[in-house]
Image 1 (cartoon, rainbow, N blue to C red):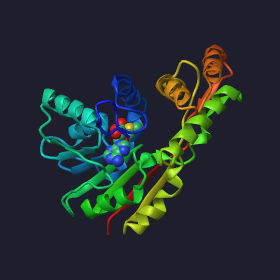
Image 2 (cartoon, protein in one colour):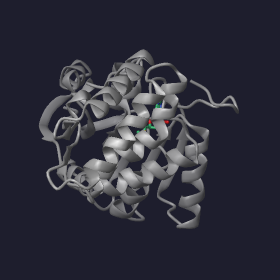
Image 3 (spheres, rainbow, N blue to C red):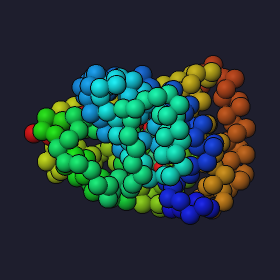
Image 4 (spheres, rainbow, N blue to C red):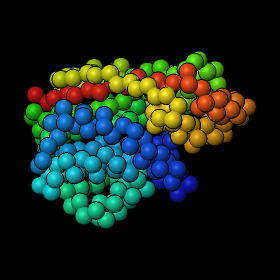
Amino acid sequence: MTNEAGESEYILGTDDGELARLDFQHRVWSASATSLWERAGVKLGAKVLDVGSGPGYCTLDLARLVGEHGRVHAVEVSERFISFLRARKTQQALTQVTTQQADAQTMILPENSFDIAYCRWVLCFLNDPAAAIARVAAALRSGGRFAIHDYYLYTGVKLAPPCASFTRAVAAVNQSWKASGGDPDIGQRLPQMLIRAGLQIREVTPLVRIGRPGSMIFDWPPEFFRLYLPRLVANGFLAQTDVDEYWRDLQAYREDSAAFLATPPMIEIIAEKP
Ligand SMILES: C[S@@+](CC[C@H](N)C(=O)[O-])C[C@H]1O[C@@H](n2cnc3c(N)ncnc32)[C@H](O)[C@@H]1O
């Protein structure tokens, strides 16, 4: 998919709204990411590959964890996101960060050179995730690890008590995502793909959180819906009346002490190159 400037972008776009949403999303999930990085072996001096880095919110955190003698190489298809990351890396004098604008499915990387590769919410958007995994596997050194965080049952996200307008919006997101060639349930296929790429599975962990009104978790889907539901209406996946009903319902749920949001079930995987 390309934007008005003719640049590559994924289905959620690369505008200022998406930059801000990814920042918020990173704050919601940064503790989980840090824990996964630690379990995968990220440490001072490590050489890390961040695949589909987006604007680099993880890249910059990783850069601080590996320190000035380590390295974090970010690969991202969007020119806009990579430029944003380059500017921040310069601003923060993080010389250990390097960047590459490339499609993860065709990226050229040095072989046998990274200690850790990391990929969060990217494989689910790719037409050919196995191609990206094969390239990551080749780039890892022997003993190197690939840590992944992704969805395995997107429609498992629930606003409770059951909310029909929310369920309709989720079904439309799911449908448009699949129509773009992605897989919102990719986690179910990832261990098999990793093994086929010659890696050994070291860890498979579920990740789901529940948040009540007023929490960051409760606000996570609406922050996404605010940007994405208008696109679904424009592309015929959802009616404007459904969207209006969802926002009305959400207002009522925000004031209901019985309400909660269960995130889409996600999977964390660590695989190792023999
Ligand atoms: C939901 S964002 C996640 C960004 C980052 N990994 C994070 O967790 O904050 C998905 C990212 O994948 C990138 N992406 C999508 N398709 C890609 C591809 N074929 N190659 C490289 N990056 C891609 C998008 O541009 C976007 O930055």
